Length: 502
Image (cartoon, rainbow, N blue to C red):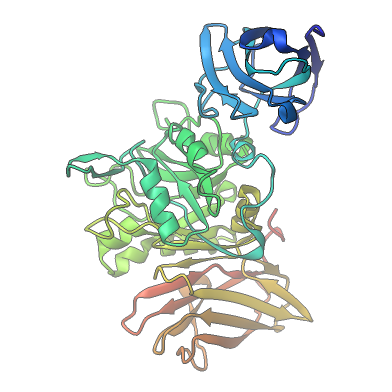
């Protein structure tokens, strides 16, 4: 038998899922004398490690050699997966199925190898590569190959606000008892609604990330986005893509403010969205309305302008559009923030009640290069996004500007001099006869279209805007004959202070 060799490579760099802080290689050779025995290899983990991975490979598969894998940390048994998994991830917050999540303790760890089968006269070389990371990237763990779940640049539809039993999501059990609702029911409801992506945003919690890790391989036509709703006493916000803890305790007694929280989100490369800002705050909805002062809105990526629960709460009154007014007031300040929507669903088994909207209603529809977390977030930040309140999968609302031979998409910025004219194109797919397009500009001004009515299933409206030389924005709504808001676009901007969005 070739003696097992342990080699530790130090990689002193900005640690991420792509660049480990340290790499340890353990290799060796086994033969029939190791049949139905266990091998142990110790390795050292320094302080400050947030996650580790183990990748095992061997050359005996054609001879039916089987090597099982397990891990022991300095305090005891961490997990065992047999031979069914060759890539293992353990982090402070979640782990590969079969292993406990939790702090990555410094000290001596042990790689356990079990040999349930190796044939006589066979030698098998194996290699285990252990990578230690100072920072944990959950997105790379959920999609380790980097390939998109769906490929190609197009519109992708999803729900960015849902809750499960890991916070205050409840549903009826098989006996009809209200119980914390399991995550898979929300994911199944999203699949039934033909969504391309789903964010699970339980309040301040990380525990549902383990469920996302379990479910993502099965629901491989839909991107599951790890999120959480940061719930403070003075406002709620969704954070998408953050792997680590974010301290939500802001207020006069904690010496933390909203901009400290925004900085923490930025350090994790996550996306921040203010939730249902116009809801009232009080005993009926504690901390729901946005009351935090001195917010650096340039660090805010999105605002949930339409919330399913709020829409049901206000039952179609004008107050249900208060989030839109809040968002537009920030646009008027020359700040570009993307409008999104979310169902805020707490029970995927119910379709609607006094404060309940089905999963996927409203839907946020994002133009992205492909269905990965990075591409989805880039699409949201770009502003090429519309909100579909109808729940009809076939509806599309797009907005383009044509100027001096160039085309600018929704979310883009044009530099236009006073008196110059820009052609705006509003395309509506899936509209019904009698629906109408409403074109809205800064300070809530309504721009009059020559014919605002929808007359065909795929219709394009044109409008010529003459620039006043200053900052402007223009966006579109589609409303039903009875005035219900069906679709909402993000703006095209003109002469944004500071130029293009970073």
